[in-house]
Image (cartoon, rainbow over the protein chains, first blue to last red):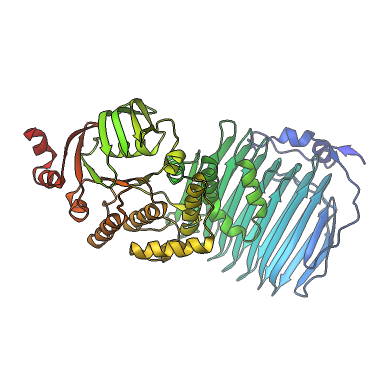
Length: 360
Length: 250
């Protein structure tokens, strides 16, 4: 095993790291992740992989039996990798092409690392309704650096459900989504008590009636750092986007929501709304909420909202006045706060409830 | 039952005085009404009794059955039998009404050293209370106050009151926002919940509710104090003269 750092990796490929003065990275402690010694772990024997599941461990990938409507191929990586704008995007040995043709069902991507793990997956959905479960597992002093591109052909529906709980390493995740006519993209990301997680989403609504919904829920305790960086591009008329991101924060944690919506001049009559709501449970946590709109069309519905504060004292008093003690009352109110996001998480709520109990 | 002696209180954050030497005794088995102009301190008084920390008692005392409650927090006051029906009940998404009621009921059971009620038995109990108050059973399945109309919220407060059976029930402008039928339902509910062992304090702006409930005592509150106490005829006189007329006549 060789201990390396992300800085070493970047240097090896002649790449520059993200700069702290870049608007998308200004609250992310790049130097911390660059300097962390990473173990270039040897791939361990793979676990038995379930059907319709791709398992990434460190820099390797295997998959289980696939539905006939799913095709997975490995392709050589482009000869030159880059840090675009300036995203960390290391050179990969291979990229994974995941194609779904008339597939209605679930796919699981498991990302696991005890050293350095990277992946580059391109998902193409055609006439499909796909629910992709992404599970992130890592240990201290590890870095996961994943890229997922999703191409939704007309009429396709893709839902991404990310589960990221109690991870001690760092995750830098990049998702680029291209949505065609009548296609629907949904994503729900949960980051629960994770040391360092940055999830970036770029969504391009390129044809009429394309829709995107992005949700995120982050629960941050002692020293945890969690960042959501989204940018939805309305490039065509009559497209729709919704964003709802919530966080609970305590004990020297850092949370950032940097959400942008851009509306191109020709994208008339689009409908977009973004909302970020945060609760700070003590005086030590930091929250940066930055919803941003860039509108170049003149006939659109495009708005945003942001709230950050403590548990509302009037709600707490209401429950106390019914004989419920402060602990039970706070628990009920925090569950109520995340209820709308939880609805989108489906069955994957056990880790969220554990995180909630921990932070209360 | 509940005795308030020379109470002075301020808004905690600004130290603005709101209650300025208030005396009031709520007797068991009686219905008391407090009327008063806007800003006289009626809602503040109700929250003070229930233990809202946004207000601070600077002097005086509030006693429940001879015991000062000032050191008790809102939870303890509720467990000891004080209930406030809110003017603006809070919406709690994700918490079914029946589950919330069972939690509150069992918290009180535990406080009294009693066993929690079995969920199925409790459900039967809830359905009986709904029938008694003419409240649709569909209220029970809904999330706590979420999507309720103003009138439904007030009736849901009454449902909580009926389930928790407090010794002291304070209803803060429960009649506001109610149509005539809903007002009659609420008034009927209050009358049916009246017992020799409990006391009601109705805070209201209007005589209308009092025609259906018929209070034993009507108190006029102005500038943080009770300035007049009488029977239900006082409310009727006030309805005719208004507060300006009342002040001029004094």
